[in-house]
Image (cartoon, rainbow, N blue to C red; front, side, top):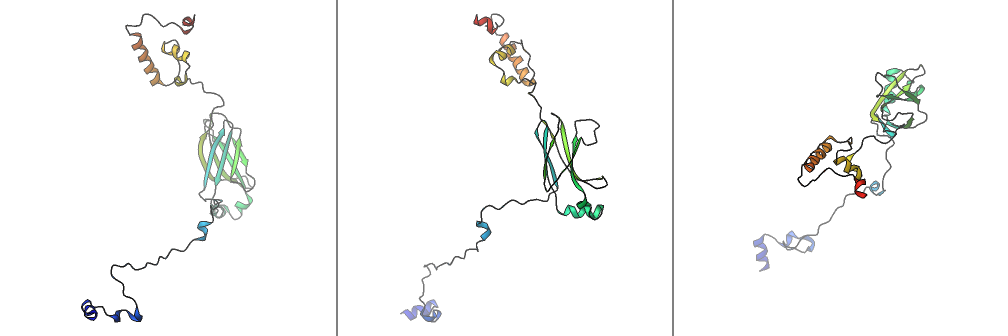
Length: 223
């Protein structure tokens, strides 16, 4: 009977050499998982940041009303480019300098400050700024002949004020100041929309039939 069933199904013992055990079609076959090779650098923890991104950029930031901070990143291939354009050895014989321009001064095209950057650094502090002025920095090379070769200009930045603002904000008025402001006795400088809204509110309040007379002052109420 078994041979008859094997002939009908087309499967005989010849299909299973070396006495292999035939498996049912419903029984799953074992699957061998092949994992990808493990990268040893992946498990070495955080890697250090590169020393340079070679994007040729100069950035200027305002630290306080009198000091600014500049940092830059130069492409190493820029050195070969400068030597090809201005002659061999110009990069090695020149000094790296940082110029500061005050854009708040009308008609001022000359830098208000120029400092020589010493050492292998990519940042520098610039002092002597004026509060509330807008500045821009320029990085370049100063050749032995005194020529300036520009390498890049920074963004524009403004220094903050050296004192408190003289603009009065109605949002932070005291109770007594707000009382006088609503009564029209004090005129504060601030948002025009806020002043218009308070004026409309005051007109509606004064037109109320329940208002017997003008507002008394806070001092007279306390007496």
